[in-house]
Length: 192
Image: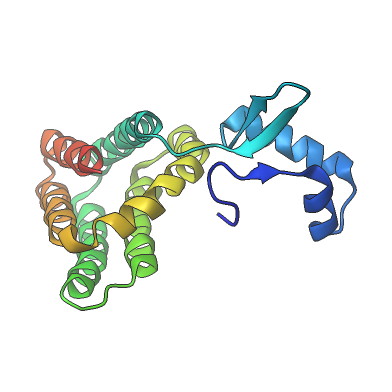
């Protein structure tokens, strides 16, 4: 998050800043390229590596993926013993109450909005995600977070809508409603 989208990445500068040789920097950049965080831009004489731009198409795709992963985890959650479900519902409700409180203040701290939203969604994965589902979520989450940060900043005036969507998720978990929780999670992510 220290380099904005579209920034040129100069291996030598990063190596110097981090006190490393260029070899591990080059390896890290190749990894980041495979994961979509940086892209190669071909020039007339040479190519450059830049921080990947944030696009609506990428956001839609990533939000769909993470929404489906969370919906799968939530389907597991609603099949858990009642007390386990209710414990998670209480945790989610408390996080959402904090989000609601923030929504009523001015000015709103977008970093706190991001952190609370992140904790809310991570709790669903923590409780309902098995090893593979959690690993899939973990692999996509950092890419989604680039957009989450932008999203959290842009919805400040409409934070009550996110709170309402979260309430629907909590309600469906309390009731053990698999179809309801999956639909509520999809609605929350598609709203982003």
